[in-house]
Length: 258
Length: 235
Image 1 (tube, helix red, strand yellow):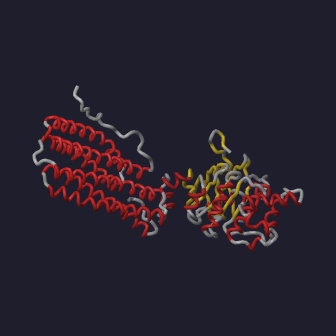
Image 2: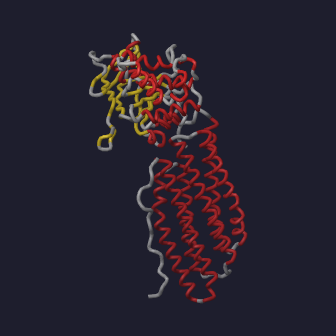
């Protein structure tokens, strides 16, 4: 969605600090995520990019010693507020992980699980539609339409990952978080996911953590570079990869990290 | 290159190698212009023939640089400063190749020139050439030092080259008008003058590339222009 040619801000992180016990993992992160754009988060291992991603749907809640401070505003609502309904939040903010992790159930059940617990379908027919639409959006329908009642774990790695994306979009999230979604996939499956990301951004806001600089460059419009828990630089992807402002960013993306 | 070295040493080597090929190629071009000019001053055909022969070397460098650039893009996927290094090397090498060609053309014409040309013509020509030589040297230094300031200096200096070129052209035209017998030499000299001025233009192109290489931005605005071209008709 654009207003006066400027993309609307979907998520606004303000002064976010994260601690694992006494160790501080993120330092004063301020980042606006634009709506219907793909934002890539890059940085060396342990830089905090995945930690930041997990703040956006409160996945860090499951880690006892993890403490998140600061505001993360989505749709004018600070999700770190006590009153935040985390189940509703995760309906709005889907997630796809590094390793494809379909439920040990049929393809159909993989997709229908979310919509059914959120009460999104009133009848079998409505559920069938949700399953079909989700699989079509994930560019998997043609490959699996005749075997919807076979186990999801029987698919290839690339298909499993698209199944997980279909599962994520079945509840119509506004935002999709992706944590290295292609790192376990071959180049063809990777290209299919990247094409999918391009399509999905029309209806969703996407944030992707990736170790592949080339992938960040290919799929994203905006890129943020994290280093040692700080957001060093963020901006337009083509600017970051052609002429970054910060030396650390340049050293990282050109393979000069000491 | 002032950046920290790459983690992958072979990549670092490949970029350094590309850089040093541009520097070597530039050195040959400088030498070509110097020798081509000396050939005009001293009527030394050995110098002219060396320039003609050495142009092959410059051409080979261009092919080499092109192959290195294609390899870097295909195999290393350079980013940021490395990407700019790679892309500008390709463009600079093609400007240098043209400089080599122009020097060669000057030398070919020099071999056809009369032994006794008027001193004022030679002086005017040498004045253009020695200033272009200075520009060329400065731009190669700017490349070595990664200096956008030096590149801008050279870029702005082209205006003076254009002025000197016009003065030289006027001298040649005067010479042409003096006697029909001057037609052959005069025509060659017009081309020689123009070729030297074109070398200045390619030097300016390189300045633009260096500016982009260093800053990541394009040199804005029109290139400085000297006085209008000479009007040949009598008033």
